[in-house]
Every structure is written in structure tokens, then in C-alpha cells.
Amino acid sequence: MAKNIYEEFLELCAFEPEEITEILPQWIKAADHFGLTEEDIRFAAEEWIPSHWDIQYQGIRKMIGAYIRELIELSKAREYKEKGAKIIYGIIPAIITSYRAMKYSGGDGVFVSFPDALLVTVLNSFFHKANPYLECAEEHGFTYGCRHCALNKTRIAARWENVIPAPDVIWSWGFNCDEGPKTDEYIQCLFDKDWRYVISRLPHDTNFGEADDELDDRVEFVAMEIKDGLKQIEEITGIKITEEHMKKALEDSNRYAFKNGMLVSLMSKADPVPLGGSDIVHFQQPLGIPFNTGLKYLEEAIDLTIKEVRAAIKEGKGVVPKGAPKVAFYGVPVAVPWVDRMFRENGVAPTVSFNLSPSRKMLTPLRHSEPYMATAEQWLRMPMGMNMRSEADTMIQKIKDNKPDAVIMGFFDFDRWLGAQQKMAAKICEEETGVPHYYIEGDWWEDRDYSPEALRTRIESISQILKLRKLSQA
Image (cartoon, rainbow, N blue to C red; front, side):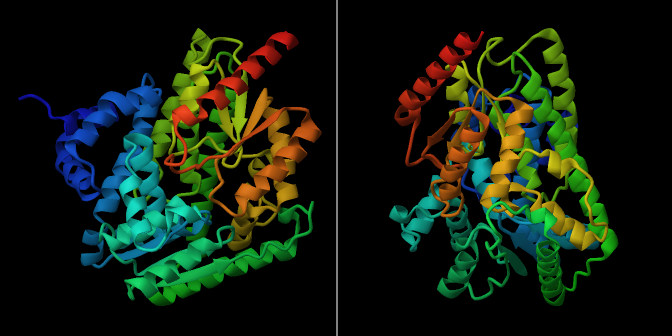
């Protein structure tokens, strides 16, 4: 019997033959549930993914497969709820250690997800089809002209269209995004009274230049917010989180972050560069999004990719010519892979996403052993837990460690915090490292406001400048 395109897609995503037999009906059902047609699957399998992803590596195909497994899992959220499982959502940026701890506590009786981030990442990265969700939210009040975040729009649309069930609770993090918690209030007030939320906030009140992870009162405050949020969730769901659950979650997060650091280090030192920046950022994304399927499939994928990348480096294989300039991004646009591709087509290699790459500080032993304090310290070592000067210092260290020929900032113009912060950080980092920084207006999640044609001249110009600089330094 001839294979259908759904089966061919799973083969592309490195599912084993015996797995395909079992999961194929679930995949067809999930694709239809989220609005993916047979033609969308064919377009992804035959055009979009081969054009934008380094599928010559089995590890990259497995990585895409891990995301597809999680999308299938999200399609079952209502089934989980009907069977009595507690549904717990969240938004990014958040401290996902808590979600892993909840999963360890409740097992199959707990379903954790950041549905908006997963949907936008999967639908746009691999199918280029998140727009219907964004347009739905705009039709119901989140106007296009206000440049609202695609995640908040997707959360509204996914619930409005009944694509996801109302959770038992959504832990709405306002540590950076001030619109995220308001979106949950919007959903509850506008059309779903059962949309129950718990909010955690972090004031942006540290002095310019203070290192947040060295401020014990700051660590204590974040630890208190975590404990308070978990207490409220326990009261709502009955899920009890112990220190042992938190310790195990911390161990898993640190192990996965270490492997990401290994991959980034290989990429930064390799010449020619064997992988694209989009591949790397998709391995980094689970550092900020909990997978209900856990880290098993992602770790299998990153372990294999590290092995394949080492072999490619030994053989001198790359996705750009040897000696090509390397650019670091504040964040390679996670759901707009053609940006990475266009730089490579112009002979420049995107390598590191600074906002998700582990820094030296993140990989050094934590000062606190108590799990809630340790989790808070871990968060405050991440870029989104720092103030702007502290983040700039971390970026400066990453520039010195990774030695890019330039840094690309931007693609966060939808974010009132990060959009402004990057413009100042670009000036600081360029002045203190001498490495040129370029700012490109754009969106990390979607590309309706810009296109390959709109950015082509900008990317070509930057690439030409970098190649000329590289030649002059030779």
C-alpha cells in the first residue's frame, strides 16, 4: 500500500517504523485538530522543512519529531481532563522547573503545557501556518495595529476556537511580560469564566549594574513567589510539590542546559559551521517551555546531534564555506526560520542565540542548596531574570567566549521590555567589545509584518560588510 503524506511526514521526523504504526492515527487527528490540512503536511514535508532545516542530520529530524510528539500530546489535553488529570498551563518567560516538579508529583494525573508557545513554535517553524490563530484574536479585540505578542493572541484564539480546554489553572508569569497576565484576565472576562489564573510578578527595580543573582533579597523574593504560586496551585489542584520533586527538576534542567552549552560551544568553534542557528535555538527553546512528554525525546535528539556535529567538524563539513563570518543573535527568530536561511544563503553563519544560550554564570555551581532558593538563583542567572546592565555584561562575556564577527539584535519589536532593552544593550556591548552590532526590526514569532523580500537588502548588506571585514582582517 502506498504511504500517505502523514506517514511520510513522520518518517521525515525520524519516527521508528513501529512507532509510526502506533502514532499515525493520533498524528492525523492532531493535525486536523489544530487546523493543518493534508496540503499543509505535504508543503511542510516536501518544501518548508527541507528548505529551512538541516535534515541531513538524524538528530535534527528527531528534534522536530520531539516537537510533533508534544503537539500530539497537546491535542489530547481535553482527554486528559475528562479522565481527571489536572491541567496546568503557563506562559513564557517562566520558571519551568516548577512545572517539571508538578509533573514528577502527579505523573499522568498532571498535564503541563505552555500551549500558546508550543502552537506558535510548531505551526510557524515547521508549517508556516500560525496566522489563522493570530487573525482570530485580532477579530476579537487584540487589534493588529497594537503589535500585541503572538503568544497572547494564540492563547486567546486557541481557547476561543475550543482548540484547548480551560485549564484547572494557568500560572501567569509577569516577571517580564506585563501583558501576559492581563491576557488571562481578558480571556476570563470576555468569554471563559472558567479560565482560572494565578499571577506571579517581579518588580524591575534593581539598580543599573547590580548582578541580580548576587542579591540575596532578590533571590529570596523570587523563591517566595515560587512558593506562593505553588501553594495556590496546590489549593486549586491538590498537587503537592516536595523539595525532592524540585531537586529532581533542577537536576534535569541543569543537565539539559549543559548539553545545550556543549552544542553551542561546538558551533562557536567550528569552521565551517555544521548547523544553522534555527536548529540550535529549537534545542534551546525547551529551556523555557515544559514538555508534557518530558525531556526524553529531546535529549535523545541533542545527544545524537552533538555526535553528528562532532563527526561533521572532523570531516570539515559545513552549511557555509570555511572561513565564513559568524553572527550571534540576541535570538535567532524561533518561528521564522527563513531569517537564518537567508543569512546562510549570503555566506554568513548564524550560530548563537544569546538570550537562551547558557552563560558561564549559569553553568557554575549555584550558591544556594535549598531547592526554592536554588531555582530562584537559577532564574536570576538567565537573561530574562536580570536587569539590563547585568544582561549586557552576560552578553559581553558570551561575545568574548564565542567570538562572533557581529551580533544581530532585534526581532522583539512586539515586546515593550525586550524591544527597548535590546537597543540600549546593543550600544553598550558594541562599545565594550568592538564587535559590530546590527539592529533589525522584526518579530521572533511571526512574519506578517516583514518578509524575505522586505529584509533581503538589509541582510545582503550586513553580510557583504561582514565578508569584507573578514577579508581585511585575514
